[in-house]
Amino acid sequence: MLTSLHIKFGNEEAVSMKSETLLIQEGTLKTIQNAREYNSLRKKEFLLKNRMKKEISGLIESIISLEDDLPEEDLNLATKSGNLHVNKGEFLGLVKESHAHLFNKTPSDKSNKKDNDLDKELQEIHEKLAMLGRK
Figure 1 (cartoon, one colour):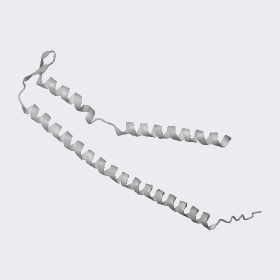
Figure 2 (cartoon, rainbow, N blue to C red):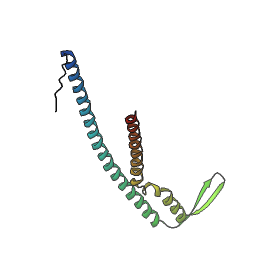
Figure 3 (cartoon, helix red, strand yellow):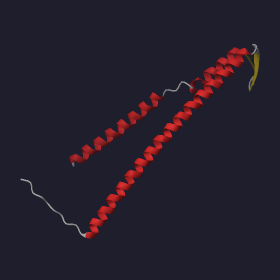
């Protein structure tokens, strides 16, 4: 058997509750708006970074092709301990190796870290909820 329970609020309480509800809705809508704006900015950033990466890799390729067209010479590099004699080909190999990390990043590593962090946070929340349920 279902029975109805009615609670009577005073005028001030009803107005206060309504205003709090509206403030919560306003905050939620602002949060959604900010999230959408953030997502659009992230997309623009990604496109710009991608374009910049392509341009930089093109510049590096053109520099390497120009250097390959130059005659082979020995480079004398001055160091703190003295002079270092390096072949041009060895020097270019060192340059390529030192800058390889700029183009070999994998975004999946970052997303896996983020997923693991979110899973940990969710696990902690579930544990806290379980503890609250026991009390």
